[in-house]
Length: 165
Image (tube, rainbow, N blue to C red; front, side):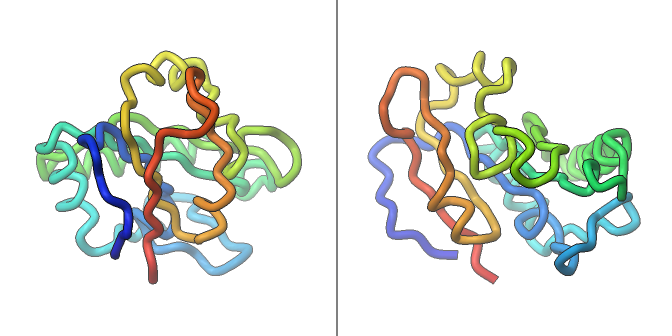
């Protein structure tokens, strides 16, 4: 992974896409419907631990369209996140929050790259604490089109990196 972004102040928050960044992405049209299909990518546990030790918040943002398609339930998604949290905790690491969109395409404003996940009440309360941040996504289109806006600024205060395969 490389970046041409120069940091002028410390990064305080990293937003991580889930599928394709934390775990192996399923083939198009297939979904991680349970823990047995969740294959964490090499280096992820160590990287999250390093973020934690550096005092950087690590927040997962993810589209989980399989819920809208009836391939899985929100309980299934939450179970995968709980198991991931347990795996990380066993290695001394943690994720600060999980936010996901359970809707189908064009059905809401919380599906990335739209801003809805960032407008969640919990996330809104965190805006003032987020500070400088990065968003790591598995597709270049995810970060080019991310439309999050900090409530006090016209442009997002983010430097963005893309995880390349």
